[in-house]
Image (cartoon, rainbow, N blue to C red; front, top):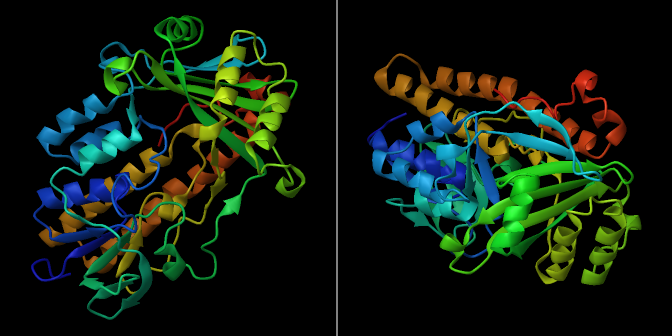
Length: 400
């Protein structure tokens, strides 16, 4: 790799891509980052991200000024100052805790705000949708739908679970695996009194549970406070997911279809959570369906040492262990550390690529399957009720 003549290309201006750009900028390594979207606000940014076991790595990759702003992205102002790290999983029919997962240091941040923060000082080339990737012994070239092209020494595919780059590194097995589960969520508004009531009985940040009679999963989490959203209410997300072995057999085209399903699968929900379900139904115009799919391969053709994958592009996983973002951070941290060794002359480029691929496959490949099993277990009360002996990854401590 010629550091003074060939830039590193980053495809995707999500959290992983922008974090990589920030780290490269500090090392004075030239890079070009591009994204298929027209701007950072051109489509929905999802909900929240919990940074836990990779939090320190995340902060270490940022310059000091941006590092300080990360804490401003929390869903609740200064929550980290008094956060016990508690995570409760409940019997969603009785409201009683099934288990308290051991505490750990964490930050729950807004995805859209953390992304805007990571954009500071980074010049993204928007509206650059990849249509082809070509490599030579010396370089890699990406061609875009807008007719432009860009050439560099390495391409980092960081586009997310539907990675365009993965279609070129893995032409025979790039497709995602769909789980037999459906997931639907909505943003709801709670008055300060309603939010205080939920926080007092359950948790102020987030909690999850299963309804035993329907094997349906319930998830509540805070998105923003009145101070951030400039209203009188707390914005929260209310989500349900449920077993759906054959999605063709379940009507799910219209709002009415979706409301009917939510009413059916939420039967037996705890009386103190019923009002959240009703608020969700009242917000049906903003329903968001999440495709629950993963990609456990965590391996790719590096195309002669010219392409790597990071984050969901490399190991897409469902959110039932809250680890996808943390593994993406671990990927970036690993790559940057290997890059430093290569630049210092203690590691060849071939060794860098090989070490990166081996580490990611060994770490993230199994993590994808753990998250898959956690998702399946979340919809199987018979497994969860005996959690002390079943060792479900849904209720186990999250760790590297």
